[in-house]
Length: 313
Image (tube, rainbow, N blue to C red; front, side, top):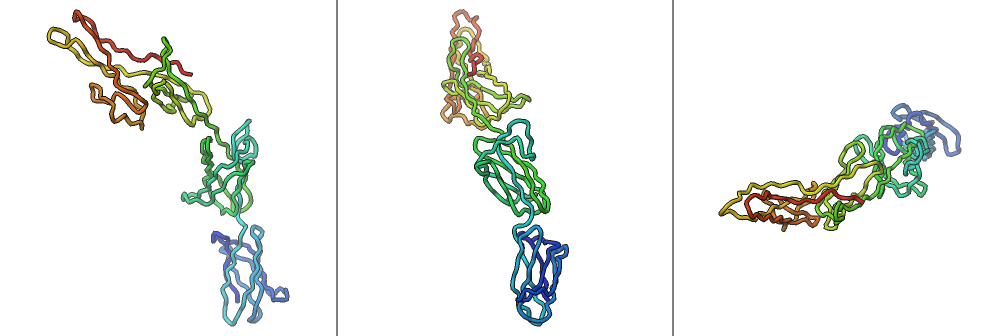
């Protein structure tokens, strides 16, 4: 007797696979079908060398020679080229097309597509062709996460359901992104305003990011998705210091304005500290800004100057 199991390349059974036992002349001696677990049995008439042929509608056929003696022989069959396939076009959306319907996406080449299973294990990785097409083959049934990433495009992760066999078409639309740059200038003299805070806010009110302007008043946001935004510019926060004016007290005071800080931007190690111990400068060229106030009759109040609202371009 010849017994064994029919499996796919990933070890999953192939139920219903047809197995045929032939002698070396090609005459059929026995037939069997694999059960739900992929198990089968074939019974040759006597000992000798036989041909075992395995065929499945979802896999490539397989044939092998088996030598049988006077005891049961285990012979497992592994089939390849079966399972389901997943493919489509990855690129930039146009028109009113939606994912998975084969329209609405202009192909983008050299996009890296990664397929992971529910455990987070990477099943396969491929790159899109010149027309944006991609394909994964020999997939087992299940739910997968399909991730697409490319330079200058926002990465996308989508859930895809793959059946036990057949082909699934799933297009992936990536959103192009743009670099936004500009300058903050004073409204009066039109001079660049250094160490101002430029903030980009999305249409739904979420802060996309903030940048501190450089010495030339410039700022830049990298990798911004297309859409409608509001951009604002603000200068130094006001500072206050208690002073006493009168005989025996100094008639000169220095107020240190602290430039705005953006999370993740360290201050310069050599930057002087303000009266509250905070750094008065940062990596964008900030420094201590002194404002000298003279009094002659003891009645003049302190005055601070701060950058005015900027003009963005």
